[in-house]
Image (cartoon, rainbow, N blue to C red; front, side, top):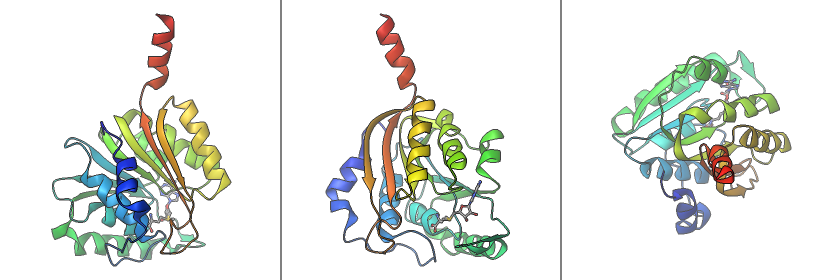
Length: 224
Ligand SMILES: C[S@@+](CC[C@H](N)C(=O)[O-])C[C@H]1O[C@@H](n2cnc3c(N)ncnc32)[C@H](O)[C@@H]1O
């Protein structure tokens, strides 16, 4: 993403205040988040891909993918046995597969991995460059930190990173520490607070326009 499309889209759409859902899939995110993801994918550079960690039944994944033919959306979910808010993992997985099928004719190519994000990155299953990366997986400090740091090598030179549940202090702290550790340069950012409603940003969204190797570039400039 050579240009900061995230900022442009939020401005053009007044923070998506009038957003309507794109797909009929139960999920833990709002129409604003879904529309924003969809427009970001549409505006990626031709060689770039979308990556999502934590799909559950596919609401955000299929929203990103719908009406974006010619794109590839990679995703993973570990589908734990049973989650407090997400119920039985096996039922969520069945629903995800049905939803991918249901929207196949109208959507980008979906490449889904039933695995943890740590395994996904360790086994280098996702090809670069990722232009848009949406993290909505393990919400612990360690899980979020890893989700950002481990993705850095496959991000496009400039990419949009979105971290869900931004209302949560742990998510914010983990993301910021990971950004520092990975030496991703933050060129621009927005903190979009959520109110758990369809009208807002659900549980909040952190949006970052980042540049890889920013630390190295600064060090090289300082050494000159
Ligand atoms: C909040 S839900 C995702 C909601 C979804 N993005 C939507 O559109 O509704 C979080 C998901 O992350 C998954 N998850 C938790 N830890 C994970 C991990 N380490 N690796 C991959 N997925 C994980 C859970 O199984 C769950 O389905």
